[in-house]
Image 1 (cartoon, rainbow, N blue to C red):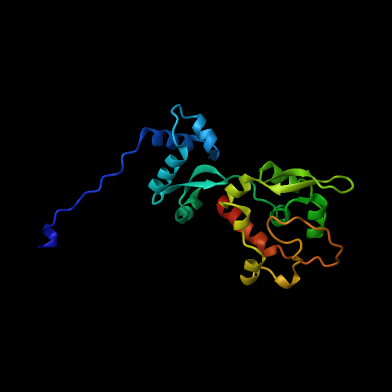
Image 2: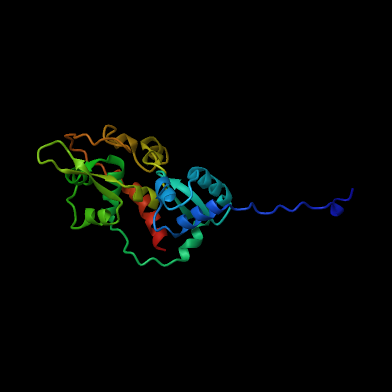
Length: 229
């Protein structure tokens, strides 16, 4: 049989249910990622919201925007392989200073950490407003007080930090072995007892203040630069 004469089977788009349309509209209009409870509260009909979200994830997986979940919160994002197109957008926000980026990277890898511990790791005192900028962006937040004299406030990263850098969880960040193998840091100069996402900062009396953050800073700075372009 001649293939040219073979009848072609047309595949019609899947019919979208009313519930899927409602969830789609709720997420599209939201100014921030939403959790299951919030989505459910905005739908008048009781339904399996998670199942609906999973269906929408499948429907959007090959589209220009994708439905993603970060820290149990759902939102639409530009497909990762199309992010270069977004460079045409103009962003008027002020770029973070080198000090702010260094501070952020230290909090990321040493949280929870106090202001004095950040200064000790950086080897310099805080510039005015450095930590406050990160707090205003809601990338870091206070997380209780350390049980030492003076009870200093400890700081950790937020869900907004994960969302901004499109990270599912902190453990998805490159660990010391990965950073070392990639040539981004010199692992021989790293204090293993205090380095690593999710590790508690342990006080050490040491004279060594190696600057192991410059390349990590560059990674964060490049991401911010792409957002600003």
